[in-house]
Structures are given as structure tokens and as C-alpha cells.
Length: 84
Image (cartoon, rainbow, N blue to C red):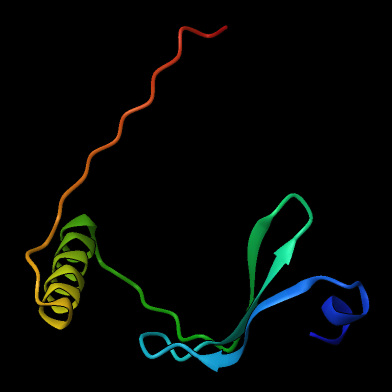
């Protein structure tokens, strides 16, 4: 964080701990107006397969919706290119 300050970059969020993975991190605005996170000591979660990942994401969506008092929103975005 000292290096970011010394470089004159804007700190977006000071040191804090994530509640989900217990990582300690801070956020700053990098050149090009890109938000960047620097973190340390987060716990690793390993899934045995895609179905476990899907279930974990659905659980998080339900939890967030409950906290917000809304229904889960699903979005699918597709991007295509013809190669030029």
C-alpha cells in the first residue's frame, strides 16, 4: 500500500478482510482507470467438480438476494467476432 501511495495512485478501499474467503486486501485505481485489488492470506476453496461450483454459486446468489430483498437475477452475455 505504501508503494501505491508513493506512486500517487488513488486508494479506492483501505485494508479490509473479505468475509467469504478471509483475504486481507485493499483496492486502488491503476493507470488507465482500472480498479485493482491486492490481497493476501485468503483461504483456498477446492471443488470436486462443476456441479459443486454451480451449487456454490446458486447458494451465494440466494444469500445475496435475501440480503437485498430481491429475487436472483440471471444474465447471459455473449460476444462474437468474425475474426477481424
